[in-house]
Amino acid sequence: MALRGIFIKDDYLPEYGTLVLIDAFRGGDPEPPEGGEQLTDGALDLQPGGTVAVAGWGWLHGNAFDGYHRVALELHDAAPPPERVAWTEVVETPYLSYSGFVGLTFLTGGLIEEGLDLGAPGAYRVRVSNRAAEDEGLLWRLQFWPAEPEPPRWHARGERSADRSKWFVTDLIMMGAWSELTGRRWRLAELADWLLVDRTTVLDALEQVADQGTVVATGDLLGEFALTTNPPREAGHTGITSGVTQLPPPGAPWDSPGYRPPAGPPPLAGILGQDGTLTRWVDGAPLTCPSVPNPRRALDTPYGVVVFGEQTVLVRPGGELLRLGSGHLPGTARLEPDGRRLCVDEHHIGRQSYRRRHHLDLLDGARRLEWLPEYEWPTGPVSQADSRSGLMLTVASADDVVLTGPGGLRRELWLPSTVRLAPGGAGLFTTSHAPPALTWFDLAEADPTGVVRWLPGGIQPDRGLVWETPTQVVVTVDPRDWSRVGARLLRVELGRGEYQAVPGEGVLVVEPWFSVG
Image (tube, rainbow, N blue to C red; front, top):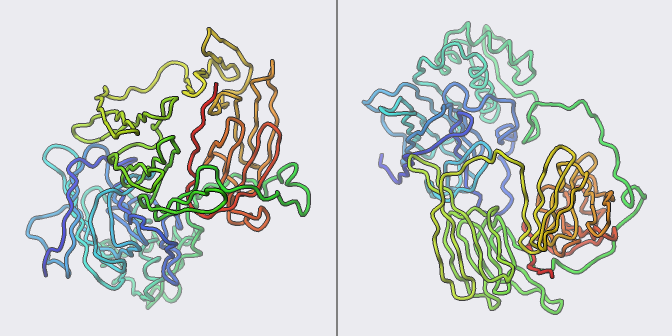
């Protein structure tokens, strides 16, 4: 029994009182084991973390609270012996890793850049222990070791577990999910012992999950029985229904039976695969070169393509890589109008939080660092600026927006507050989802009224919208619509209402660089 690896985070700040650990994505199309679909994140209606912690296929949630926590992740070659130091809460749970690398993140998501290397994908068991820290938050210890799946078992429950029936029901649901995978059968006394509660608590919880339809006990509760989920929900299900059973169909041209857009050219600036391979088309022929895996955003510039992933790199036109750093927030990246200098922010949240802005010269790689004050939430009107045109859009009220710009320009427009300024300043746009559409407001008109450009049913226009020109976008097509569109990407010319199927396979379209003037 030896310690093989360790990672410590001294200032982990959980969101919504939930410690979140997930597998780092390393490409491919991982799928849960046969019979384990109920273990995917979001497949079951759970209270995050249960009473202590619960885990599944590539995820683990711990019941935390506000404040900074200290978290230690450890890899052992076998089950470590019980500790002499008393922990307030302890649970052992199986964990299925699809990448072999785990790290801490947040309930609303985030990229895993550091963490614990498990060595290989596979089945592990993790002992989750916690107790109060001397200053604030909790001390957490997560000890992993290779082990075949066996249902979770609680070894210590603190005062927090008392009077938390909703969270205990989550414990029971995950006990059912793992019992379903492993085929484990139970007797009531044994199940109560593994859950570390009395039989009455188990019976009450079994009644609740039966009423909810989440877990079913099959067999004799006075003898032997099995636990199964009933049925596992689709991953990402929130348990909230809108009452809408069928969305209305989209409008023209998608309401015409058999319509299929004509084929168009590949993405103007290229496309990236999950492994970071950059594909660009030169004189109609594809050229590929490596960048960084798991890209989150890519910007074309006159000096190459900037790719934000686990590292930020500039891919020169000849394929050379210039490393620009790490920890950058892709959503804050913006190019100066000449395309030479890139500004991008970094924000560290911890016991000593800080914000700083990186100024990067893409011609020669020179860098300048600017320390920023702590972020303050805006209290006035919300504004959006466009560096290409110099325009600024300010939301004055629910249906009143103001456009200002060079030469003293000021236009007051009676448009919904959800409008956004298109890059290049040719127009404003809004998105909708039921059915999906982009509404285009042409700023060349004295009084823009808006024209709707409908999209195929599965497209989410707020995700992955890439502007190729001031009036032309590329959107990602839902897999259910690939055959109808004839491609995985769709190009929409918003001004003329023209559509094209865009060839190319990848996960991220490069945002082209263009100037206006």
